[in-house]
Image (cartoon, rainbow, N blue to C red; front, side, top):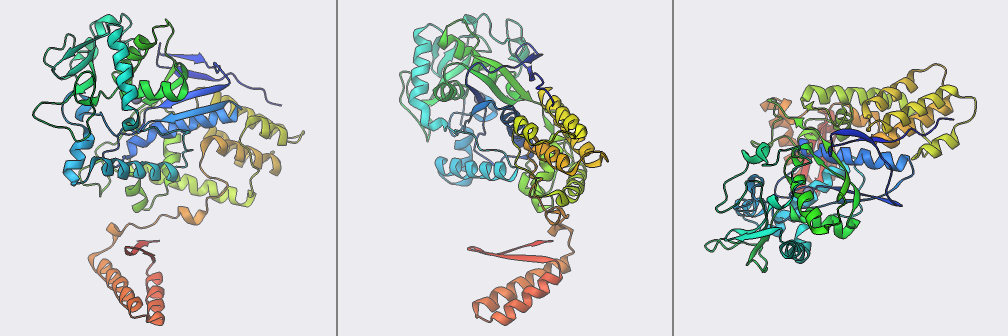
Length: 491
Ligand SMILES: [Zn+2]
């Protein structure tokens, strides 16, 4: 029987691989969540697919987890700065909708993408706007402890009072690494000092505003993560995750204010895990006017969300990854071959943990036992999803594995990969043509048929409507009727 491998994770705090052992019965994980002012793009998905892999790794090992992902619906100024308008308020003005409508709309869009990518829901999704009184209390405590100073533009954290400031970013004492990126704020003592409270400009009334000891305004962006994580996971917890762009500023500031607040001489959070960038490169997918491509652009172009997930898992989370349509195309082809190979093995056994897989495995299948051990070793080695994928391929090729052992190894790999290998159908992975690949004549003909069918349905001429649907079917067009009218897509 395979043995457990010690779980090792790369801790950004100290930049080294470390053994991970849970500090208590439940392992708290906090992941910095989306600022909900626009559709999330493909690069935004990578940290959440990573956090999902982390959760699957803990489930695999039988470790209970409590996972919190925040929703930033207030407080995030444009360009990550400390002053000026919120991203949400700018979006609301642009789209002529209320700030809360905007937040709700893009929060839903985020959840749709998470579900499509088979990311397990977090235990809590706290909204920043729901915790403003707690943030004010937190900032008042920092003020009482002497860590702050007030300017007309708000209440600032005085980074000179924190000798360990910037340790996570490995910046020098003056914060020189980051200083160039930060904007000028009148009266700020050090460039690294950051806003805990952003006071409203006298001439510019904010849409979402709260009264505070420092005047009307809104919390600084960094504050919400300290306050909400402590409220939901306790003052200290085990793991904080986020994109690598947070390592140099946002997380540095979260640590500074949290450790000043707690003042107990202990590190606030033990492990900081960061996902590398997804480079979107020059090759922009069509559609999102000017913006980066979204998951919906991929599905529109004929790719399955699981192909995108496989593309992400094919590289280690700490490697930079270049997004190209060709790479996703290749991932979809790989997934199609995997599913075709796995379909005859179904139903797969319900395996979520190493213990369950080991218990199911009959004695006398040394190949399956060895492969299961490889999977466990791979996930324990800083979540090496590429190695798990390679082991999955080995399991499908090995002539000496038993069919029962093969089923268990495939199910075990997918418990960690989350590619829905037990249920995906080959047909779902056929490349659909995108409407943009059609000629103008073809497009016109299809739209005419769809319009004719709508008219026939309006006239309750069902035989005619059915006949047109059959014609569309022959052209490879699928029509779905929705409350707002028919939508069609190519097969
Ligand atoms: Zn955060």
